[in-house]
Length: 147
Image 1 (tube, rainbow, N blue to C red):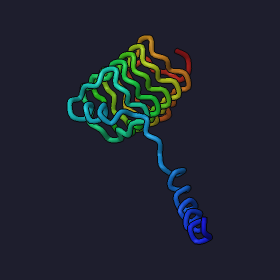
Image 2: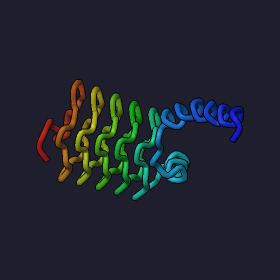
Image 3: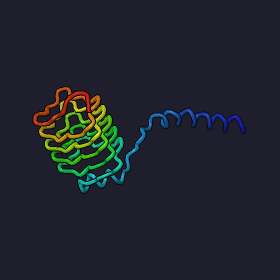
């Protein structure tokens, strides 16, 4: 390999490496995100890590969905059915989830800072490490720690 070719390959490698490292990983199924946003129904969908910030998901059917590490900041989940959903480490900061069903959902380490969660159903939900700082939870049996 000539010196010029080697230097060119080295330059390409040096320029490309930061781009590969900085590219965020997306685990969610893009078809499932589109299905949810267009129909409001995505039971048992893979939405892990999905960016749903500010999404209008009123009455959405998310039963059994994988929302692990999803960004639901400022999302409207009023009346949404999240029964059995995996919301481990999900960001629900400033979310509105009044009358939502979290029955048997996994909310381990979920962030509900400043969320509005009036009259939510949480029977059998896993709530370990949940952050409820500033959250409004009247009529819901949400509390810090425990199952």
